[in-house]
Image (cartoon, rainbow, N blue to C red; front, side):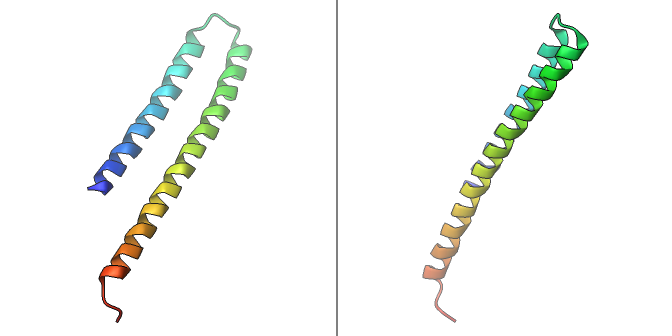
Length: 82
């Protein structure tokens, strides 16, 4: 059951990040600014979003690793030593 909720959380975060990227891109492309300035802002926003996404993925990977470790420990305590 926790596996399904983890998948849902990953899907939600992925959708949120993708939506933010698309929304930021559309907002900047429709803003009344010169092309050079818009491209510079897009690059800056993309770098910031990439950093945020990487941080979130690192956190999620750590959480998943912790849950796997907990499951391994629980399984070892329940199974007889072979």
